[in-house]
Amino acid sequence: MKRDAELACAAAFAALGLLLLWPVLDGGFFADDWELWLAHPAQHLASAFGEVRPFGTYRPIQLALVAGSQALWPGTTVPVHVMNLALHVALCVGIARALAGFGAPLAGAVLGGTYAAVSQLAASAVGGNDTISLTLGTWAGFGALACLRPFEPERKARPALAALSFAVALFAKESSVGFLPLLAAAAWWRWGRGSRDLHRLVSCLGAFCAITAVYLAVRHRAGGAAPDLLNNRFVHLGPHMLGNAALLGFAAVVPVSTTRVYLGALAHRWLWPAAGALSAFAWLAFTVWGMRRAGRLALLGAFAAAALVLFVPVLPLVHVSELYAYGALPLAALAFGWSSGALLQRGSRAERAAALAFALFVLAANAWAAREDALGMAKSGREAAALMPQLVEELRALPPDGTAVLVDPPLDVPNYSVFQVSGFRGVLVSRQAARELSGRSDVDLVGLAPGEPRPEPCSGCVFFELASGNRIAPMP
Image (cartoon, rainbow, N blue to C red; front, top):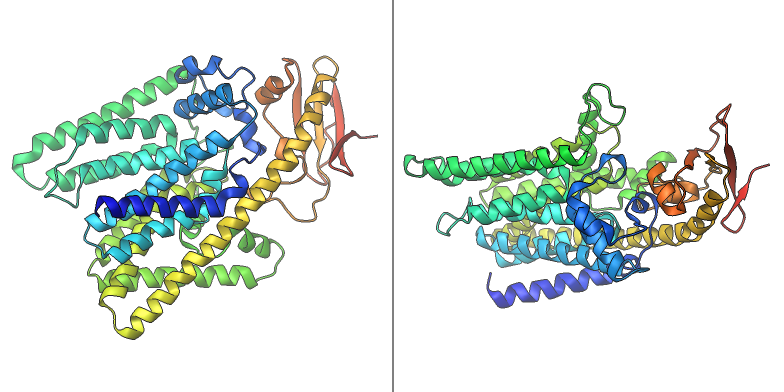
């Protein structure tokens, strides 16, 4: 792809991102976002690589970037979201460039990049206040793969740059370790099939393994949590991993709103769930059709296998969010773009018309869902911003060693992921965050779901409910 075409794509993808995600570019903190609210942000700049945030999370690059943003521009989340959007646009340009480099038609390259630009997965990735780890980790991980140029043997590989990019991905997000086997496979494809380049393969694999070992050692020294697959209630090995894989795969390809699909299933209203299942099946059939027409059906299988490898680090989680599917978005975009381009270039007139109609449907449905999700996240941020100052005052007024117990009311519409957060969920934070927000080192915070019985006995507990007007009030 020529330089002018890349710049035009970048401008178009940025415009699409701004148009769809504008409501959440200044979105407030809610739910897990509060774990990155820093009382003294400047203090974290120098210590980011040696500390963890609540729950043993070790993401030093994200912590340093968020701390810098809060230190330089307190009171606004715009810089964080602009960074996320810039990383997302760069990823979209990289997808279009890769498709053109692999020999896909220009229309396919543009459609592949556009697919990623308007994907509903972008709403949570760009609109979150704690998602630089995801956008940067995905961009850097796929950047490392691109530096090896496994499918472009005529172009010079850059293993040193690939190693640096992989290191950035690891220190951005722990699940980026899933790129290690993909990098090993790419290096083998580039250098492992001939005896003359085996030394390059060995040195490259050694560098990637050494970087992973250094990362794990630094993470352990900083106090990063290690998963206990046998005893931890948050992660374990079991049949639920198959369900997690299916959920993430579905989220990565379904064109219609996943929020509406979930809420419809929860209410036993099956129109949206049926539309989701049918559209996901249609997406898969479309990509198989297009990749077969392009003579690249085996490559589609490789993309699917690579996505599964990237999901492996999060599959043991008891609860997964569709947010994790963003890591496989480039693979879905490559398959969609390649298939679209092949059908538009090589198909009959009827095939071209059908392919164009379906491609436009997929793009439009994703764009609509992304816009809805952005509006939902912005609303969640506004509600949490109204509740948190009240909660902080209540925490400060607690008796010594007191615990605030937030009793959620019955919800008219259930909460879902980050797109629909109401009640106390938007301000229910960890003990460390509660103490940092309130400035008190002796308080705690507990939440009760609707209908859940009060803990008895509960020494030092003060119970709160959500009164009319989005007010926090003590319970009688």
